[in-house]
Length: 234
Image 1 (spheres, rainbow, N blue to C red):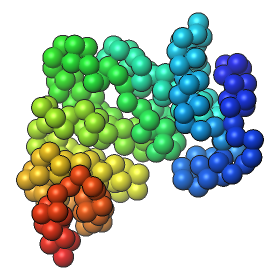
Image 2 (cartoon, rainbow, N blue to C red; image 1 turned 135 degrees about the vertical axis):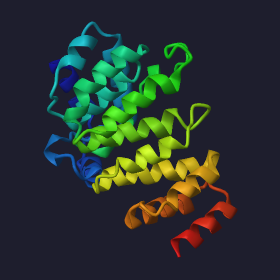
Image 3 (tube, rainbow, N blue to C red; image 1 turned 30 degrees about the vertical axis):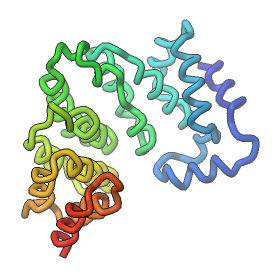
Protein backbone atom coordinates (compact mmCIF):
# COMPACT_ATOMS: atom_id res chain seq x y z
CA UNK A 1 0.00 0.00 0.00
CA UNK A 2 1.21 3.47 -0.84
CA UNK A 3 0.94 4.85 2.68
CA UNK A 4 3.13 2.03 4.02
CA UNK A 5 5.76 2.77 1.40
CA UNK A 6 5.59 6.47 2.23
CA UNK A 7 6.07 5.69 5.93
CA UNK A 8 9.05 3.46 5.11
CA UNK A 9 10.70 6.28 3.21
CA UNK A 10 10.11 8.61 6.16
CA UNK A 11 11.64 6.10 8.59
CA UNK A 12 14.74 5.27 6.51
CA UNK A 13 18.13 6.47 7.75
CA UNK A 14 19.13 9.70 6.04
CA UNK A 15 22.59 8.41 5.18
CA UNK A 16 23.22 5.22 3.20
CA UNK A 17 25.44 3.39 5.69
CA UNK A 18 22.79 1.23 7.35
CA UNK A 19 21.30 0.20 4.00
CA UNK A 20 24.74 -0.84 2.73
CA UNK A 21 25.49 -2.70 5.96
CA UNK A 22 22.16 -4.51 5.80
CA UNK A 23 22.74 -5.48 2.18
CA UNK A 24 26.01 -7.16 3.15
CA UNK A 25 24.51 -9.01 6.12
CA UNK A 26 21.34 -10.20 4.41
CA UNK A 27 23.31 -11.07 1.27
CA UNK A 28 20.64 -12.74 -0.88
CA UNK A 29 18.16 -9.83 -0.95
CA UNK A 30 18.50 -7.35 -3.81
CA UNK A 31 20.15 -4.18 -2.40
CA UNK A 32 18.03 -2.13 -4.80
CA UNK A 33 14.96 -3.18 -2.79
CA UNK A 34 16.38 -1.91 0.52
CA UNK A 35 15.53 1.51 1.93
CA UNK A 36 17.61 1.29 5.11
CA UNK A 37 14.98 1.23 7.87
CA UNK A 38 16.05 -0.11 11.26
CA UNK A 39 14.12 -3.01 12.80
CA UNK A 40 12.68 -1.13 15.85
CA UNK A 41 11.12 1.38 13.46
CA UNK A 42 9.75 -1.45 11.32
CA UNK A 43 8.14 -3.00 14.40
CA UNK A 44 6.48 0.31 15.24
CA UNK A 45 5.20 0.59 11.68
CA UNK A 46 3.89 -2.98 11.89
CA UNK A 47 1.83 -1.95 14.91
CA UNK A 48 0.42 0.94 12.88
CA UNK A 49 -0.52 -1.44 10.07
CA UNK A 50 -2.04 -3.94 12.51
CA UNK A 51 -4.29 -1.26 14.01
CA UNK A 52 -5.29 0.17 10.63
CA UNK A 53 -8.24 -0.69 8.40
CA UNK A 54 -5.72 -1.73 5.75
CA UNK A 55 -4.23 -4.70 7.61
CA UNK A 56 -5.95 -7.38 5.55
CA UNK A 57 -5.26 -5.55 2.29
CA UNK A 58 -1.57 -5.19 3.17
CA UNK A 59 -1.18 -8.90 3.95
CA UNK A 60 -2.88 -9.76 0.66
CA UNK A 61 -0.65 -7.41 -1.35
CA UNK A 62 1.98 -9.82 -2.65
CA UNK A 63 4.59 -9.65 -3.92
CA UNK A 64 5.92 -6.56 -2.19
CA UNK A 65 8.58 -4.40 -3.78
CA UNK A 66 10.65 -3.39 -0.75
CA UNK A 67 12.65 -5.68 1.52
CA UNK A 68 11.36 -3.73 4.51
CA UNK A 69 7.76 -4.32 3.41
CA UNK A 70 8.38 -8.04 3.82
CA UNK A 71 9.69 -7.52 7.34
CA UNK A 72 6.65 -5.42 8.26
CA UNK A 73 4.49 -8.16 6.73
CA UNK A 74 6.23 -10.75 8.93
CA UNK A 75 5.73 -8.68 12.09
CA UNK A 76 2.04 -8.11 11.32
CA UNK A 77 1.53 -11.80 10.50
CA UNK A 78 3.19 -12.77 13.79
CA UNK A 79 0.29 -11.24 15.72
CA UNK A 80 -2.16 -13.75 14.21
CA UNK A 81 -3.74 -15.79 17.00
CA UNK A 82 -5.47 -18.54 14.97
CA UNK A 83 -3.40 -21.46 13.67
CA UNK A 84 -5.42 -21.94 10.49
CA UNK A 85 -5.24 -18.25 9.59
CA UNK A 86 -1.52 -18.06 10.37
CA UNK A 87 -0.93 -21.10 8.17
CA UNK A 88 -2.84 -19.57 5.24
CA UNK A 89 -0.91 -16.32 5.57
CA UNK A 90 2.41 -18.18 5.75
CA UNK A 91 1.59 -20.28 2.69
CA UNK A 92 0.88 -17.07 0.78
CA UNK A 93 4.04 -15.27 1.93
CA UNK A 94 6.77 -17.91 2.06
CA UNK A 95 7.19 -18.40 -1.73
CA UNK A 96 8.22 -14.73 -1.99
CA UNK A 97 10.80 -14.80 0.82
CA UNK A 98 14.32 -14.58 -0.58
CA UNK A 99 16.52 -14.11 2.49
CA UNK A 100 17.19 -15.50 5.96
CA UNK A 101 16.26 -12.30 7.80
CA UNK A 102 12.62 -12.21 6.71
CA UNK A 103 12.39 -15.99 7.09
CA UNK A 104 13.67 -15.91 10.67
CA UNK A 105 11.44 -12.95 11.56
CA UNK A 106 8.40 -15.18 11.03
CA UNK A 107 7.24 -16.47 14.40
CA UNK A 108 3.42 -16.50 14.65
CA UNK A 109 1.90 -15.96 18.07
CA UNK A 110 -0.66 -18.69 17.30
CA UNK A 111 2.09 -21.32 17.26
CA UNK A 112 3.00 -20.53 20.87
CA UNK A 113 -0.54 -20.45 22.20
CA UNK A 114 -1.48 -23.75 23.80
CA UNK A 115 -5.13 -22.72 23.83
CA UNK A 116 -5.05 -21.99 20.09
CA UNK A 117 -3.54 -25.45 19.62
CA UNK A 118 -6.21 -27.08 21.73
CA UNK A 119 -3.44 -28.41 23.96
CA UNK A 120 -1.99 -30.48 21.10
CA UNK A 121 0.94 -28.42 19.87
CA UNK A 122 2.99 -31.25 18.36
CA UNK A 123 -0.05 -32.76 16.68
CA UNK A 124 -0.77 -29.41 15.02
CA UNK A 125 2.76 -28.25 14.18
CA UNK A 126 4.72 -31.37 13.21
CA UNK A 127 2.67 -31.96 10.02
CA UNK A 128 3.09 -28.29 9.08
CA UNK A 129 6.83 -28.42 9.71
CA UNK A 130 7.14 -31.59 7.61
CA UNK A 131 5.20 -30.04 4.74
CA UNK A 132 7.30 -26.88 4.73
CA UNK A 133 10.55 -28.86 5.10
CA UNK A 134 9.64 -30.81 1.95
CA UNK A 135 9.44 -27.62 -0.14
CA UNK A 136 11.83 -27.00 -3.02
CA UNK A 137 11.97 -23.34 -1.94
CA UNK A 138 14.99 -22.65 0.28
CA UNK A 139 13.37 -20.33 2.79
CA UNK A 140 10.14 -22.31 3.08
CA UNK A 141 12.27 -25.33 3.97
CA UNK A 142 14.32 -23.23 6.42
CA UNK A 143 11.13 -21.97 8.06
CA UNK A 144 9.85 -25.53 8.52
CA UNK A 145 13.02 -26.43 10.42
CA UNK A 146 12.65 -23.31 12.55
CA UNK A 147 9.25 -24.59 13.73
CA UNK A 148 10.96 -27.64 15.23
CA UNK A 149 13.47 -25.40 16.98
CA UNK A 150 11.23 -22.62 18.26
CA UNK A 151 8.08 -24.48 19.11
CA UNK A 152 8.92 -28.13 19.75
CA UNK A 153 12.07 -28.28 21.87
CA UNK A 154 10.07 -28.18 25.09
CA UNK A 155 7.49 -30.65 26.33
CA UNK A 156 6.53 -31.50 22.75
CA UNK A 157 10.01 -32.67 21.79
CA UNK A 158 10.46 -36.11 20.25
CA UNK A 159 13.91 -37.40 19.18
CA UNK A 160 12.52 -38.27 15.75
CA UNK A 161 12.19 -34.55 15.10
CA UNK A 162 16.00 -34.33 14.98
CA UNK A 163 16.08 -36.89 12.19
CA UNK A 164 13.29 -35.03 10.38
CA UNK A 165 15.38 -31.88 10.39
CA UNK A 166 18.47 -33.73 9.19
CA UNK A 167 16.41 -35.31 6.40
CA UNK A 168 15.52 -31.79 5.24
CA UNK A 169 19.16 -31.20 4.26
CA UNK A 170 19.28 -30.44 0.55
CA UNK A 171 22.82 -29.10 0.50
CA UNK A 172 21.80 -25.44 0.42
CA UNK A 173 23.72 -23.17 2.77
CA UNK A 174 20.80 -21.40 4.41
CA UNK A 175 18.96 -24.66 4.97
CA UNK A 176 22.04 -26.23 6.54
CA UNK A 177 22.61 -23.21 8.76
CA UNK A 178 19.14 -23.62 10.24
CA UNK A 179 19.62 -27.37 10.79
CA UNK A 180 22.94 -26.69 12.51
CA UNK A 181 21.33 -24.00 14.68
CA UNK A 182 18.52 -26.38 15.61
CA UNK A 183 20.93 -29.16 16.57
CA UNK A 184 22.95 -26.72 18.67
CA UNK A 185 19.81 -25.51 20.46
CA UNK A 186 18.76 -29.11 21.09
CA UNK A 187 22.06 -29.68 22.90
CA UNK A 188 20.86 -27.38 25.68
CA UNK A 189 17.69 -29.24 26.64
CA UNK A 190 18.14 -32.67 25.01
CA UNK A 191 21.88 -33.24 25.17
CA UNK A 192 22.10 -36.98 24.62
CA UNK A 193 19.58 -37.06 21.76
CA UNK A 194 21.26 -34.11 20.06
CA UNK A 195 24.75 -35.59 20.40
CA UNK A 196 23.49 -38.87 18.96
CA UNK A 197 21.99 -37.00 16.00
CA UNK A 198 25.20 -35.06 15.37
CA UNK A 199 27.14 -38.34 15.44
CA UNK A 200 24.85 -40.12 12.93
CA UNK A 201 26.93 -41.71 10.15
CA UNK A 202 24.50 -40.49 7.50
CA UNK A 203 24.89 -36.86 8.58
CA UNK A 204 26.77 -34.91 5.93
CA UNK A 205 30.29 -34.12 7.25
CA UNK A 206 29.98 -30.44 6.43
CA UNK A 207 26.65 -30.21 8.24
CA UNK A 208 28.18 -32.03 11.22
CA UNK A 209 31.02 -29.48 11.35
CA UNK A 210 28.50 -26.63 11.16
CA UNK A 211 26.43 -28.04 14.02
CA UNK A 212 29.53 -28.65 16.14
CA UNK A 213 30.75 -25.12 15.54
CA UNK A 214 27.37 -23.65 16.50
CA UNK A 215 27.32 -25.76 19.66
CA UNK A 216 30.83 -24.75 20.69
CA UNK A 217 30.07 -21.08 20.03
CA UNK A 218 26.85 -21.17 22.04
CA UNK A 219 26.92 -19.57 25.49
CA UNK A 220 24.10 -21.90 26.58
CA UNK A 221 25.85 -25.21 25.89
CA UNK A 222 27.77 -26.52 28.95
CA UNK A 223 31.56 -26.88 28.80
CA UNK A 224 31.35 -30.66 29.22
CA UNK A 225 29.11 -30.92 26.16
CA UNK A 226 31.49 -28.71 24.20
CA UNK A 227 34.34 -31.10 25.05
CA UNK A 228 32.27 -33.96 23.63
CA UNK A 229 31.64 -31.93 20.49
CA UNK A 230 35.35 -31.32 20.05
CA UNK A 231 35.95 -35.06 20.22
CA UNK A 232 33.27 -35.63 17.62
CA UNK A 233 34.92 -33.01 15.43
CA UNK A 234 38.18 -34.94 15.62
